[in-house]
Length: 212
Image 1 (cartoon, rainbow, N blue to C red):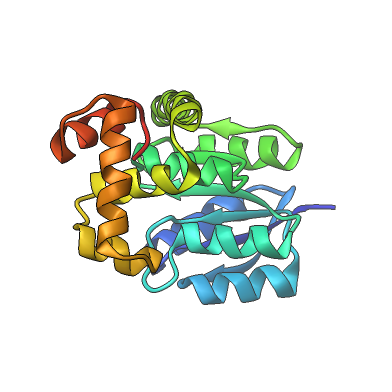
Image 2 (tube, rainbow, N blue to C red; image 1 turned 30 degrees about the horizontal axis):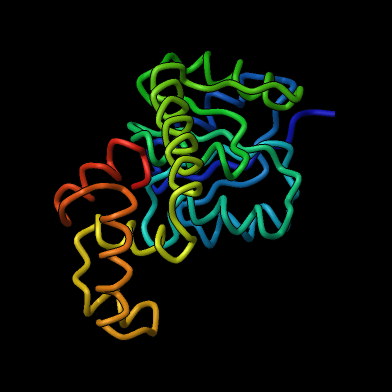
C-alpha cells in the first residue's frame, strides 16, 4: 500500500513542485492538493491520508488552526509542517498539537521525501535548530510556571500574563468580569509576593521566567 499524502500550501507553484517530487516515488501517492485551511480539513476528512504536508502560513485558517481542528477531531493523520520560517512559539505550539515533522522549505527536496517515510513509520523528523530553541523555551516556561504556581493563585497568574502583555487595569477587569478595584488589589498582592516594585518589573520578571 502506498503512503497516502495530502499537500497543503497557498502557492500553486509550490504544490506543483511537491506533486512532481512525489510522483517520482512509487511508494507515495498524492491524494489531494489544497490551498486553504478549510480545503485541507475537508481533504483530510474525505481521504484519511497517512501523512499531511502542511504549510503553516495560509490565508484565513493557517496551519496551526488546522492542527488544532485535527487534534479536536482526533484525526489519525500524521503531519509534517513545511514552511519558510518558524519562530519558537509556533514550533512549541505545533509540537504540543502533535506535529510529527518540521521541514524548512530551504532544505533539499529529498529530505522532505525521507521525512514523509520516517513520519509514516512512526518516527519524528524535527528541524533541529528551530526545535531546540523552542524546546529550551518550553522547558523554561514550564519551570517558570511551576515557580509561579507555588507563589501565586491561578487568578493571579492570569493577571500577571495580562498585565505583562500591556493590558491596562480596565481591560483586565473587563476580560475577567471583575472590578478595577479588585484588579488593583490583586496586583498589589502579586507585587508583594514576587517582590517587584511595579508593572515594568513584573513584565521583566514574567519574561525571564518564560510566562509570556
